[in-house]
Length: 617
Ligand code: G6P
Image (cartoon, rainbow, N blue to C red; front, side, top):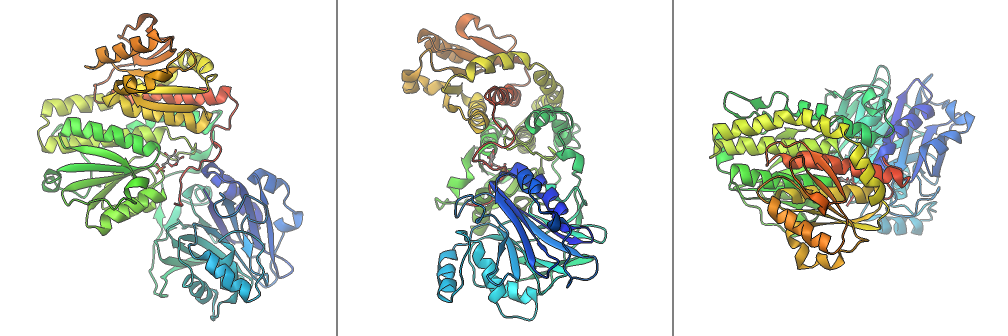
């Protein structure tokens, strides 16, 4: 999804900006560009459809040495952008930055302007000629034509005319020592350096320079100069934001000897789970200690229902969470895609605990669902990975996942930690109700066994690799699981679709005979999740039904399950506790998607058409 960078400092701006854009690549984009104050007293823009490295290769030498004669001595100022096409095709013209007709203002914009067409028509009627099809370009013209004594005044005047969402950075020849940035629904973060300042839409572009960051809130703006920043509201009232420290480091965004971020992040899971559990296992009371929940025991007892909201893999982790919470805490629970929930005028119940789950903390649909719950007086907590992200700040408390930065679009370690987070929440809610101390102990023991067991699964890559070789040749496949295994099947199908582009459909194993069985043939493989639990016999019966129609099967199962020739390939994982087994059963499916995509030669970390966090509708 679109990314923004900005720089004010003593280094030539273009290389710093291009380096920042490189850090944002993982989010998904189709074009990129930078704009800096140039030495002829004009704004110099370099932008193109395609990859950042192509843009970098074509940088005019002059751009790297640009220095605005109007700027204070030695100062360099610039903005950059990676674009993910929404309004207008991914062309050179539609790439950001966009410059005003008089060449004096350049902007980069994330988000969608709802009234762009009307504003464009009005500007064209006044004689302004547009050079792109984007909604964003209107902002460059509006700022340039606005009246006001300062750039800040003109940005405020321009923003007063637009409706919709924006993360915005503005460069202006008449204010050569600064950037003005603004946020409404699309993140803007300021990075505080030594005698230099950075701006980005994602912390990954900042940690290479500084760990001190300032998150703007919706409706907030900031002036950024080399020696500081000033935050204010749309009514020009000072908000006096202070920087916070982020604990992610530059190294976290390096491949570190791995071929792809996805496999690196799969292998990081044991450590990620240990971090998520750290300080949260309360042996004294056989419960989970969740300090950030902002709910006391009385609040937790009053919860009569749990509703989990997320998108994509986060939604499937939510399905695991709902199953776990209902089973362990005996509270009715379900998960729903946040993207659907927010549009169906949901009934918000005062005694329901709403839980938003998101790796990035920036997924717009999930954020909008949180806001809908809050607007109607509901109580919502977050299970979020990115500290200080929008959803984390919007929720009324929550559980940070501590998976560390996740760069690959396909979520692995964050997804696993979401499940661990839900398990902690389930034990916590259960122990306040009827879950016995012995049962609490059993589940905590299981959680603490997970890291070593995940390590064993990840080390056992060979059988998955062999299965991926024959499976990736199929044009379509089924993922089957039931009850605890259904979320596993759904997540397995999602992973495969996301990065290998092979069609995959998840079904409840129990539903097979009610329709999908008609499709079973030697050409349609099934990946069956077959845990050693009370439904084993039922699952084996389904495998017989598939075998009778010569459907090839890969079974993801436990070591002590004997399937004979019902499965063409078998991958086993160690047993944990039945409620926690889905977490381990998911890991081979991550490896399966990875190896299938690898054998098909795809760009694993940046799959086509997808973005790491979808910050628009
Ligand atoms: C996008 C990605 C999915 C991801 C979903 C939710 O759609 O392609 O892989 O699961 O966003 O992201 P979040 O950051 O909210 O967990």
